[in-house]
Length: 209
Length: 209
Picture 1 (cartoon, rainbow over the protein chains, first blue to last red):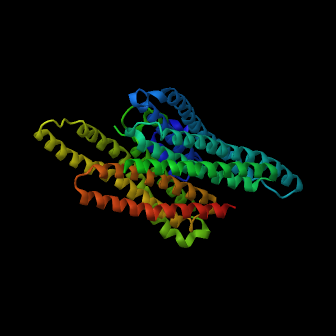
Picture 2: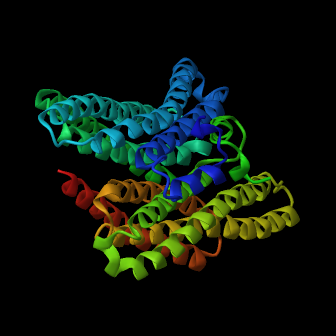
Picture 3: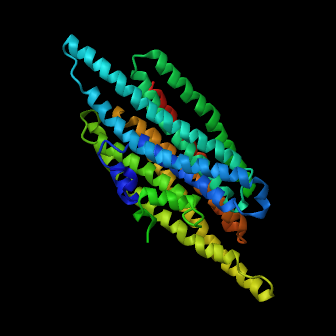
């Protein structure tokens, strides 16, 4: 079962409920997919316009990429739920005997790794969505320029939200070298793309004045 | 037909397409509904915990409010599509004769008013979602504190995205007094709640370290 087969009414009700999944991670992937879809819409409504004929090749390439990113983010929304269950189970393993302690540590490390990779992939995909909106702001029809601003904001919120799940899980990892590598990448993606998203939004806002 | 009866796969595909609706405004309402649903989830998973017993009354009140806001934002997502069509039609009315010019101006003013009220209501609802996350950060279980950060970010992106549609439409309004009143409220909501959302996110991020 994929959450993406639920209607929006069903999904938001499930999100609001006590059910352990979907949670903030999956929801951030969904907001990212919305950001990617808005980029596709902008391409679809700009391609074919005479004024932007010179960018048609580039717009088609961006469209291919945003369609791929939308599908990937929806897939990651489901993945996020799949890595949550083993993580919750591992946290509740007993640690009375030495054997149990060692076994739990081993299991934890593996599930923490997986539970970090998924939100990190959500961050990577959203960073790319932001970079594409950053470019689209200069080559899209004024009729859809506001959608560039909306898409950049949706992807930024997803980028930041997903980072929280990266940081929660790296904090608990025993392998500090890997943990620091993940944190470094997460912080770099935020530094680069949070600003790019804000610049995109301000650019759009000023265009509309 | 409501967009909220579409599956997430169907909705994001429709958003990505050339179809005039849904667009950035409706998508922002959806992200806001996700932010409200996350607040409800936080309440649902904190209510009943001994440590937060003293806040149970307040948490139940917040839950009532976030459930109402989720439903309202989903309703506004549909409304946004409903006000778009008459707006697009009005823009394409002829203005050759004096009579046509006057008629168009009259129609435009009415549809612009409606097309501004909807995104302004999306902003108002998201501002309230942010205020509730701002409070929830201090009274929710550590197990769901990251979801408070995610919810605040989703609502902030929706608040800012919806503001673009307010500004587009007020710019075209002939009634400058009303236009400035709408702009003032939009700017005040951004000034107050954009910062509250950022503070919530930073608070959560620091809690997780």
